[in-house]
Image (cartoon, rainbow, N blue to C red; front, side, top):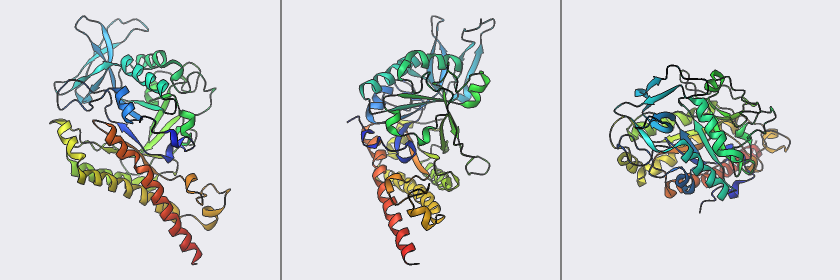
Length: 373
């Protein structure tokens, strides 16, 4: 049941669709406007999640000791500086506002769950994206220490860039991939392609807020590049509209860029789970499919329309599409969800079949059009 990727080993990462967990570490007991998941990291992985949104801060326990946990609603975070902290010591701890809250498990707990999962399921990978973290060096050190050899590219980069977008699923199997904000790593003076922190791959956000189009895709990027935008609304219709517009903007992306679509209505107030349950009723599940299909179809038609006969049917052409299994175009690859479970993940994985059917149909239509010239 858990081996969702075993049939995609020869596919590139940007050729498949898989679920992502929004605010993945915010599970357990807590306020209804804070908790976003009902399963822990290992259970989410077992349900089918392959991409995890992780936001980590340092929490001070009642006994004065410090630990790393996921937090939610970061706009209200207060960073308490530790005056006189020695080099190597945690420089601060954080408090969240009265609206926010903390996840159940520590970072070490969550990493252990991820490691245990990939060891038990060697055909699968897990991607952990760390953003808006506090005391990032300690987060990185914990990842290196806990994940060990299951961390992708751990001490094996040799200085070469690892562009995850075009890596095959099989080459990532059995690994936990850790992604960090490249600007934050740079502030820390980390050598991203060096030997000490070679497990620190980066994420590149391609969505340009000003133009609503894609930033430049980098072929030598050390990590994963995606085009997408969190809509930050608690209204289902507004989120649907915003995601449709964002995915429609995928026509501006390089064919190797990956798409990230958010099927979430987190918001600041109210019961997140109650809203999320409505998002997975029949009519809204169809809306998810409609938004996904519209984004993929628009990007694919735009790209096919710009190709020549030689591009379409010459095997040495970079754009060769006579074999649909080799075709790559902008796709909403990662569908971010709240309260991930097996049925929601199956709904997302089924989009791989839809993608294949849509591509075959459009290729046939393109072929007929060329033959009639």
